[in-house]
Image (tube, rainbow, N blue to C red; front, side):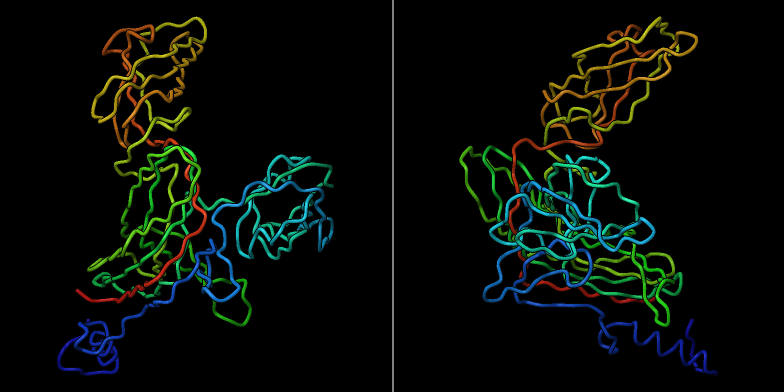
Length: 404
């Protein structure tokens, strides 16, 4: 900690660092990025995050419908292993459907070993080259398959970012950010979706694979702050609509991570199937994840028992009308060993975090001794909203280390 008077070299360093990390009037440097030129979001997760609008540059699509393929060729094969694949489209496309850096998904390929996600390296109207994150001895391609791109429910980085180093327990990171963005949305039935703006923290570690240079790898660490815009599209017409969320402004955001090197990025997300833990309006999802506890030790079962259409009883919930199908497995002593729950899609206005229960009297036992307790951890939105493009305008992010 710096002290007065300065008596040695270490004290001088501490004093200068304290001044540089102090209020703006003391001349500190806010580390960050700002821009006002509109840019398209490409869906990549490393620089460049956005692609500037220029003459002849079309907007990168947020969603590309499945494209049938006719062949997959393994490239750069070494000892039977390959990190690159060349995909041939069954029908030439009008324009290259994918862009370098996008993560595409392959499905329905024979053999299904190829059904996975890949990063696009190059793409033309007839072929696409991808790179896998690992090197595998891929089997020979046989037939069929589809490839598509969908950036829904995926956090996508903007170029508004800053890096800082936290060196002591008395240091905080002061963050401010703003972002304006537009969304072009397509839908053909009543839909709900969220537009989410976040400040996310990534923790850096030295990349030891780089020889003769210092580079870093960054992994997601935490969401520091977020703002959510919820939209309800009450129409059944086939159309597109542009939503302008206005300016998302984050001020006086304070973060206190552990010691280390961090990267703060302003990021965006189009949420059509939310798993965030906030108040979300929607319907229960069939097969939704859940946390359940069942007091079933007093119920004797000779075989697997299924209870269909069992009513959900509100404990702490804003929803209503939900039912569930319950399957209970007996253990070696014919008492309950496990239970599985499939939530039906006939409820409404349930939110993540709602607590419900199923009476033990509906499960072959008694209540409350054999009640099953549920916590909703995922809700789904009705409709088919599909984002087409995302653009960002004025955007900035600064991050500064300050001492308490």
